[in-house]
Amino acid sequence: SGFGVIGRRPEIKYKNEKVIINDVLYVDMNRLAAYAGLSSSGSSSTMKYIASEGQYIKFTNESEYAVINGTKVVIDAPAYVDQTKCIVPYSVISKAISTLAKKTR
Image 1 (cartoon, rainbow, N blue to C red):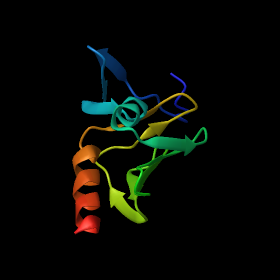
Image 2: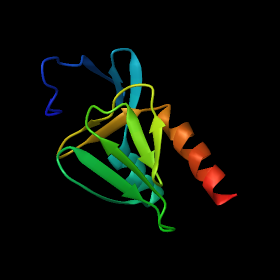
Image 3: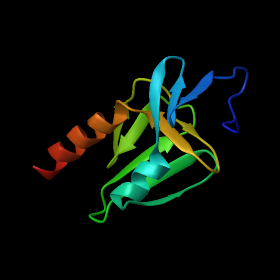
């Protein structure tokens, strides 16, 4: 699958373009970022998505944390980043929105 998981292979199932790993629903951040008009930068193990206002969210391969505007936030399951994809638990989207909303108030 290209996710660089060492020692264990996550079970990845695709259902109607949904990605499910170990019973957790994941989303493709690259697709979401393209839809939302976010720019991105990164490497084979880290991806950063930047909004036009300079706000950002960053994911590191197999980390159970995201960094949102410099704040480390626990996510429900690890993100998987490689050279072509960044998939993250669906639940991280609501955490990102709530963290960004707090920063803009």
